[in-house]
Length: 193
Image (cartoon, rainbow, N blue to C red):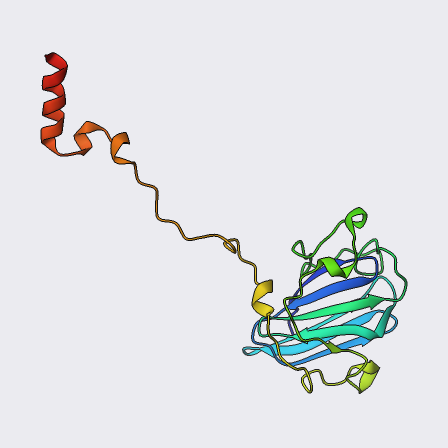
């Protein structure tokens, strides 16, 4: 039985960003159909992963792009109509537990400035439409190009922060008994004089 990988998504008026979170994936295959059907299959470790998402609306396969990295498969899907979707998937059912909002890429509709506001870290993208084969995509492993810049998409709370040493009390803040014993006796003698 196959498993479902975690999927993160975000959108702009003209694009949908889908990231399949699967480290060290092998034989990754992605299929995108103009009707808005996104399919993924691949292996990681001894496990087979598959998913099929029926997207909210149609997409333009020829203008959509993909990058298969070491830790994830990142896709930029061009929407057929440049409007904000109410949700990622069509239908009225509950969203599967493995589909989550990608808050790192999310922008509210009233703050949308296009995809230019998203730092792609120099990733090399291949077009879905130029891959050949079924549904305009085919085997995704051939001709994928480099995967540089993927480290910038790693979730890290310490980016841009310097490592610091644990805070110690300054010498003036320390209690007298924390210094050498003679200092405490000296202070007591001065206080009684």
